[in-house]
Length: 236
Image (tube, rainbow, N blue to C red):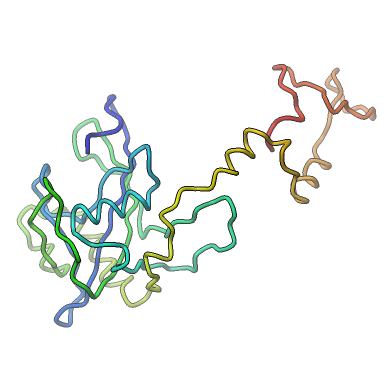
């Protein structure tokens, strides 16, 4: 897709995945020849303004490789956070980097490590590269014009991550958006009660009267800050 930020020195957020597979006694990764850059890289793409990173990766993998999330497992070093009610939790990337694909433009990439033992159920979509291959780190490094840093990341995953990190089904992470109540809470903080921890923090917060001194007088519940915003209505 086109760059989301086209101004000079613009930064786009991207997400990519090294899909690994054990073949012939070796760990190999799925790479494709990038249509615009004309070099072999892992699949991935831009995170659009209307999607979260996990949604972006799901559609990029489907379009560029034919893989569905149901065929893949995410390599994770630590257990996933559980019990959140407002946050949609995504798997942790194996690396995060910022690079410049073109002069004056930058991509900050969330690099995921995944593994499979299946062939993709689909094929690359219209307009996507049809050149895909499974390569070992040595095969990848031996390519003419191999991108140095991509070789380093792929080699690290093959040698240090596969077999050492937990393999979590990719479908364990939802493709849903974050629930709406979080937005309602921020916009209408009085509509929900404060948590005990927040109440305790508010009790211990220094209070001042209108003169700015730490007086003993109890401040009004409707006292305003200097900018005229009701202090009691500010989300903490």
